[in-house]
Amino acid sequence: YLLDPTSGCMLMSHLEEPKVTEDEEPPTEQDKRKKMLALKDPVHTVSLQQFIYEKLKAQQELLGEQGFQSLMETVDTEIVTQLQEFLQGF
Image (cartoon, rainbow, N blue to C red; front, side, top):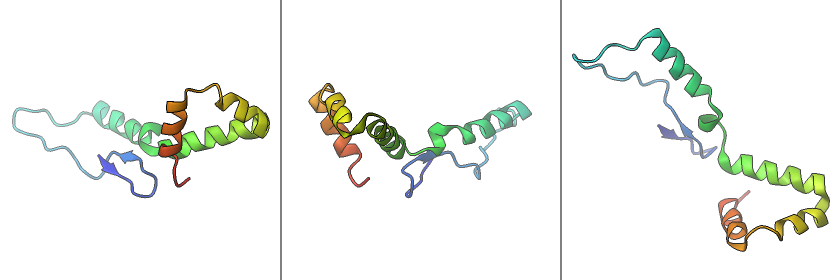
């Protein structure tokens, strides 16, 4: 896995082929297909910071500033603090 410095995502390197030892079978077509699917998985391609920021921003736009603030007041203060720290810079 590699850390993408621009997105903050953990990326699976598709360039590295796993080393096959003598007692291991080479990868099957099914194994290769699974790896290609994993490379497209949003877990490995979407920045969690950006995803959370976009979802919170969408809620803010949907509810309006007052509605959003009312909603955020119902969230545990420690979670709000952690969200603010996590999203710092966005």
